[in-house]
Length: 329
Image 1 (cartoon, rainbow, N blue to C red):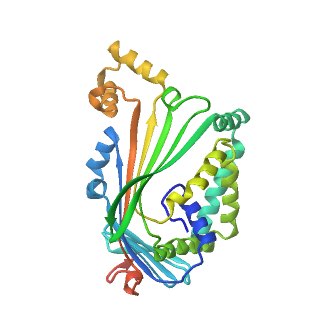
Image 2: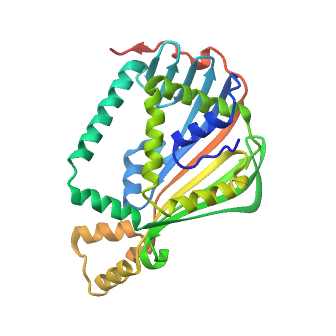
Image 3: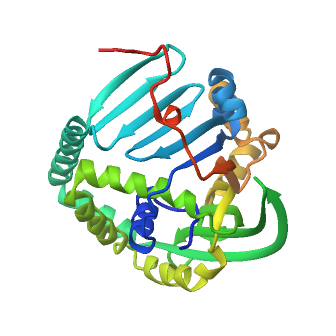
């Protein structure tokens, strides 16, 4: 099993479900997640987002039998497969709401029908534009072992950097612009108990959405096929997957937007002519950073996920509604 945090969460669950037999064991983890937005937006998030935005959120995830609990100091959720219910918990107000699997299924079916209607109502020229845009994108993939090592949560880990870049077909990233996503992972040995969390999620998804989930996965594969350059990239990922063996104890993901040479020239021209004055110009310069100097690469956001501890056991209390919490109808 190759365990790492990358790409679609649902795709990860599907891979886990196919490759690793469920052990049916209990598990309890402590995890910390933080998302940092850069520039002016990041400042606004830090200002109004409180300690969760500044310091991240530490949560406890536990699986025991037919129940899974995810709890933080802000909110939580308990999924019960036998009851076919989800308990959504507000830890600050000490209350919870109950949602049945049937209700979740109905919400999903409505959202899917709405999306299909919007796609059906799309004008032919709009559909063609979407398809052409997909054909004009090109993706590259790279994975490197850096040789760096460190201890995390009591495990010896090694650093692996995975980079994906997307740009206009036939042009370099520096010339045509695009995006870069960099995942810096500290991989330890495979921790089999962690697989149980993904297995539980897969059971939950199948219980709610049934065979429709698998059909949607096929549609996702068809959507990926719209991008011809995705196939060689996925083949390269498969070839390099040996470097990703193990469990990610810490993953830092950075998403950067890259301006094209033409955009950089235009920004430089505007700046030299003194354009972009007033409040809007000041905000634009603030968002660009570096005292208003245009930067070709701009970090949009950075997410950090760290596994703080793992226990191959969980108690009934770990997956129960906290004492004193009341149901909100």
